[in-house]
Length: 265
Picture (tube, rainbow, N blue to C red):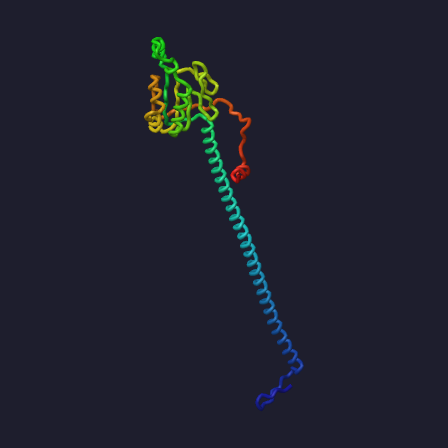
């Protein structure tokens, strides 16, 4: 084989053109194979890296989702706790209010023992004076002894002055109490009581005493009858509970619906 370089003939001894072509082809194949292998390696590396990033991203999203769910759940639980606390607080308030109203009802009904500032009014018959007057033939004995009306009038005056609870010789006065003369004694709540009598009342002491001492009032009548009477103020008066059972055979509560109909007519 001869190659022409410039004007000179160069002959490659022992090498044919076919061999040269084969060598070139082999070289090119090797080059392309190397490039392809590198490309494949790079592609696989990129794929692996991309896959790893996607997996990490998915995992991160999963954790975010789990965190959001947990956070939402925690918020829901906290909200429930606050609701329960509010319910308990509301329930406690309702119970306290009901208890307060029950205590007030018990006081009004005389079902509970009570204490507070108040006064006592002590009354006693003037038996000696009454006997002297009778012996002299001038006076009626009944003028000098204490009557049921005397006790009733004193209690009414005290009630009008704002007294909140009463008792006579330990007998609590309630709405069903009966005070009446039975021979020489006074019967209160079915119990016969003889003089002396002690009326206890809870209320503002000065106001109660002022109500009893009104000019022309009950105390004037009692003093005029020469009945022994003593009024004292106290920082604490204790009045016992009503010790009888109150039973209603004819009276019953009116419902709200019934009351609305009553008001319409």
